[in-house]
Length: 426
Image (cartoon, rainbow, N blue to C red; front, side, top):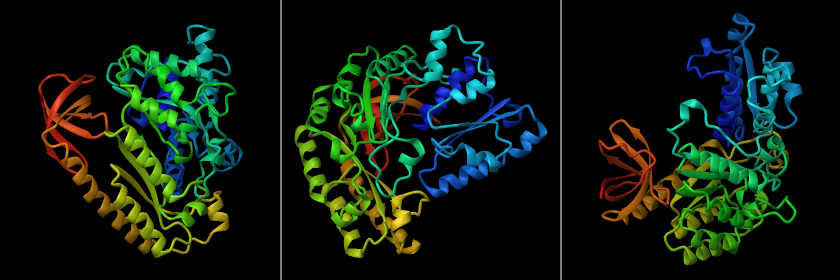
């Protein structure tokens, strides 16, 4: 989401006549876009922004903009007291305050009032920053901002606000504009992406939106993340199964495998519910890959409860497991009401157990690709090899002198490892 937000800021600044510089000392405007999902991320962001104070002192005309979750939807006033050298505080996904500050409320360089509205209201078009034009193969498109589910460990609802779905027409228009600029793959984004449309009376849901985007010429692949098991309905499964450009890769966090821990997290489903959903997806989409998120060491999690998570992961053999150790997060229900009674050493031990297990599982899963021919969308050249992804989101490297950027090519897999594969063009 922050990548998409930053692209919009860069695009808006370029339309005001600014150009990108890699050197802070040369900048007239510095934007720091922050993530604070974890306390460590907020600490890092605070340290980074305070490091800019000497630049501001040296160049008083420098405009510093702090943006994103560190500001949140209601946090600017307190930050102004601590960070008096910062000129502009912008909520997540909103370049408007910065553009207004730079133009004293009057947009000067944009072509017309309609274009002004698009950039400040962020509704239906994104002209990529110059540095990315013609180079960006895969782009992110936010479709729902904020979150209204409020898991007990999560800070996002208080930082990004309640759920707000973008109109389908605006999303489709943005996807068309990206396709005209050479983008071949788009990933639809939402904190809980499969809740898209629930706040729009009589509006389309995610399955219907996928069908609309599937008609956009030039887009080869469509992905979406992150889903929630409670809202992943049969219509969405059918859309993935029936739309060739929607990739068979699903991000479906379980967070924990024990029912008591899941209830404490306020996830709204049981271990068996999750198992049943995975089975249903695999029955309808046999070649689908599934990724999950897991938090270890949640307050009160016993050894046996942790082992339930271990057993679920071992049984389901998912393609990816994003692992995290629980940490206190000021402002969450878990921090206010639960005792973080598991040591850092124990959290790390559990983390390593799941990490080792997942490496074994994904090594076995990926080995099945050896000798197979798969279609790969190539994104960029890394040193001497082209990097691309399969429909199931597996990373593949290929050596070729040909320019493969943005092309979908069949390859034969010659080597597999847990985190990537190697192949040759067919």
